[in-house]
Image (cartoon, rainbow, N blue to C red):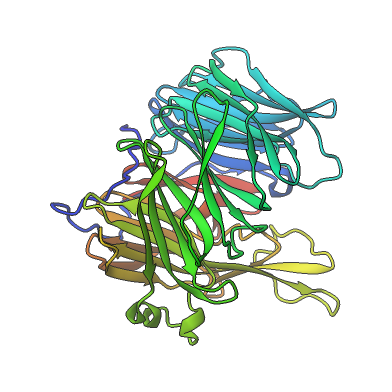
Length: 486
């Protein structure tokens, strides 16, 4: 089985458009699973086995499958302690890297473990760092991690302290054998109250962080920066985005190791209290510490009309950039999704609730999750719009974090394929939408086959090969995985 080659560039010639019909769907056998206190994730191919992870009160397990989703082995991760927080898995060559946070004697300890292609431990887990557990805080984001595109470098970092003008970090750079290459305690200093955003790791071990003023990415920011930490982990350098009088909403980063540069995209507004006016697209060069490309591309009338929104001025206000795909000709494809969260009081009783089996019990207020249309726009190197497409959907749920909403995207190099749940019927159904290099769209209702009645979780799935998706499927107290081959 060939391993995943994530296509960072869409081919612009010599490739036929892909039809939306899935060739095959393979299902794993259902396993007992308690949603309320369980966890699951897709790991991916390692050697000739496709791995998934599941955790419940019974224990922590890696399940290994062949390409027909027949279970080959279940490996108990018995080196995990009884209580863990965030767990992440990376596949690097013929090895699986496991990062996990353990709660031990009032401390949160960040560990790393190395497994072979049969999920057997190659060496004793390494304790990388620890921090005192914040008992009065609901925030469990003690450490974050990033892996380079070539899978040879891993960065683990966490904030050790935060003062009004300074963020202090602990950083650990590892190779894919878990050798520590560098440790540092760098800090970021600013006169502004800012929020950290996305993290990327270059193949050379350089860490890139986005930051912006305001409490979250949805608020309009008058200032934004890209921070770069050199591989020795000693010092951050930063560069402010030349926003001028414009305001930014969100900031998406993509690493380009071939040209050693970082792509940036966001939406912008001319006024802080105004509506979103267009797309920001930029390239950051670490060699020159500059932005050789920085474009503010306004939404044109045709694109606004295509939203089908009654209020054209506010049509893009709830969109977030989800992906940027860089093309051979210097242009790019922007993928964004309409998304927002509302809250309402339960003082007068509850209303209809979607996916009630998986919901948390509401308190005084109910959180409502709205995931709307997907927008895909193709721009050339000069920032001119070539084509656009809107995938229409309306997904609404309560008190579940939007678990079954949003979508999973496959980039085959010839087409972008989106798989998502359609909530527009009494029972949710699966939909496929595919756009080729010319923006031609095909839509198809997808038959789930023998798992009819199960609830697919596309946003928790992963592209595991060039034309393959692996997606969790829940059916109350059971869990399986669906391998969809295009």
